[in-house]
Length: 252
Ligand SMILES: [Zn+2]
Image (cartoon, rainbow, N blue to C red; front, side, top):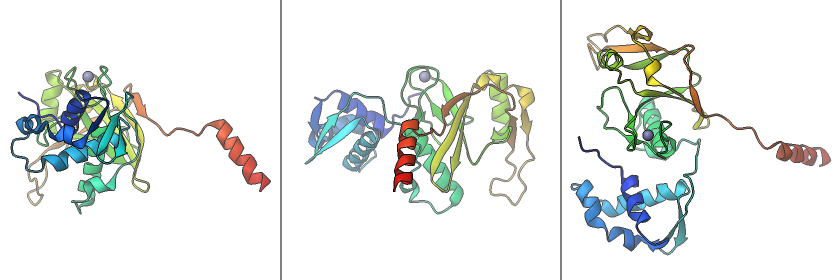
């Protein structure tokens, strides 16, 4: 199955082939390359500009002004901040949360299984998985909560989940805990999918006839005592900076 590259990936691929300092025109000149991947998109230049901004926000690109850019050879810069602007088109709280977190994940998550620095978002209707690695083809399921997760987390639809477990295709589970007061990600852990065995997957009741997705059956997953790798945690401030601050307060 051919995979759809994101605009950010496409623009980054073009940028990597350009001299260190380049102009917007250098990127838009590769219009046919973008058209091959997104033949129906009529807003190619807008998408290019948007992607250049994402690359700048990640710290891989510098805006020099006057439509000139400079690429920086560094690791993408991590940010715990969720950007509400990415969900400006939505009014439903659940949707806003989902869109903000997916956008955050697309910019900040990386493959824990290989050296790939980003993950590709899978189409919305992909069963069981949300993201995939382009290099090692590992799959990821993103779960987010405004607060701390309990030891039982909500899974995807029951039937495809239990099927994935039985076929040894469970994606890695990434648990994102965020604080909606500050629109910021607090803790992020990854649990290897192969540790989620069938006895940990419990079917939930089917949704009632009046529900929007009547008859749909989800599942709960017991993740208690499973090993996890920490991806994000709140960092304390540098001690010397705190002590300097403390002295400054007390001297004033
Ligand atoms: Zn990978």
